Image (tube, rainbow, N blue to C red; front, side, top):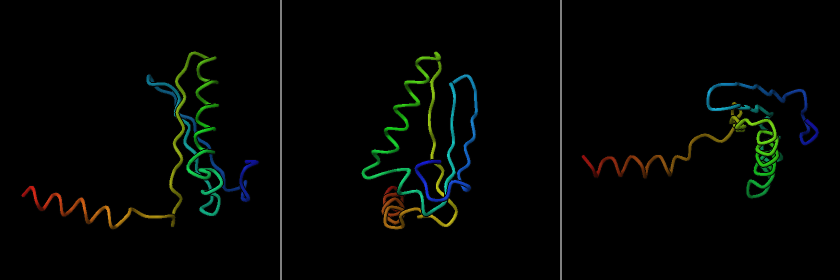
Amino acid sequence: KALVDNPDSVKVNRTVDEMGVLITLDVHPDDMGKIIGRSGNTAKAIRTLLRVVGMKNDARVNLKINEPEGGKGPNTATASVDQAMEDLKA
């Protein structure tokens, strides 16, 4: 919560299963850039810290950052390229 401008919008959910621990993170759309960081460096650092904590506790810990509502949608250029490739296969 210290990394973002809207700490009240931060939601963290923890799910434990046979694969380990999955932490899902929901943040305000304006804070996505701060959580991900330049070239994804902040997200990589958070994941590294979680991996270290997991190793100390003999658990696998993964982080999933959910795309906020109203955020960037799927890249339409990629979608059209994928559709073109499917059309070629047909």
